[in-house]
Length: 437
Ligand code: GLY
Ligand code: MN
Ligand code: MN
Image (tube, rainbow, N blue to C red; front, side):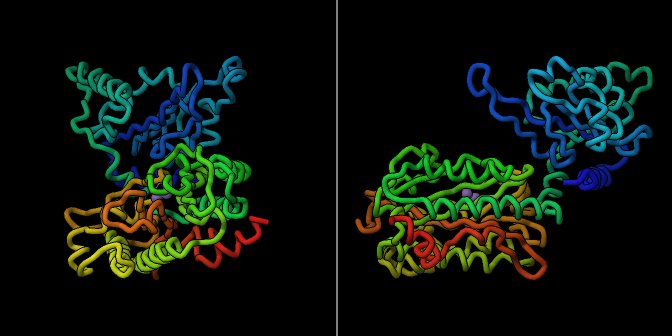
């Protein structure tokens, strides 16, 4: 993404913040996995959204109207010896030259410099409670100014969470963001296709997971979240992550895996038969989930509200479950009583963006949010019937199905950006036809 895109976002945020304010955003902390081995570093999404700066130990400070520059980055200083061990650093100079900061300082100097930047500012935009250690630094800097208030320094009077402004901005994706999300979607869709092409009984769930890792990494992506690769009964566990069972003929395989590209996520679920052919029962439920998804996607358009797709999915699922004899009663009453909840216990989607469960309010006051162009959401109905489900005939047991696509709200309706992953029964069976030979 171009530095001008990040500059535009900062300008927009500062316009909303107002002149007598300041914003402070630290990036994510590095996390230990075990002993001294770390998890791969992933910048904080809010921080990265405004900077594109990929290194740890960095803080963005925005000071609207500051004469010597409004965008200030605190970053790790250059250090040839450390860089030999832990990798290259942009340093303050690189932060200005390559990342568009107006001013940049070594992170070690932040304690000396930050109080001066706070001086004379009325409002501090900072999100408390995410980094407790950093919270106490911020409080300490404000207190330092307070101590000098008798010499005429003005202490900030107001702390405001940055999330309201920033997360609302992040909800509306720009053209550059949609482009990144389409790339993440394309890579993930191809990986799902690849999984269908290699799947056969006897393989292990982790071997299918490996197809995703390979496909993602060879396109410069990583997993946007821990992938779910669950055969048979495992497909009925919503957040199954063990991915260590052997795949059996006659079972379905549910895969929820998405790629992250340039810090933007895709989120795709496909469900298909391990041996390439749906059984009659599997097919009946699969077609039902697919119809529910189509009905939900048809509701994704400007002017409809957030819950319209969910309501549409629930309606189709409930009517279908009655038809198949899995629910008994009047559809209207069953929906009112949420009688489908034992087989469809999650919602039909969420916002999608830099975070897989992206930021943005789902309600404005008491009302569901109205969909607008540039919003991106998932549409992911499912049905989950583990063995032993009370009142459900045996033939439906151990069927877990979810079908999940990523959908952009456009001016006239919506665009499914994950359509490259096959999902009709015919498409899937045709693609898998040669696997068993
Ligand atoms: N992969 C997480 C979700 O579907 O919400
Ligand atoms: Mn999802
Ligand atoms: Mn998912």
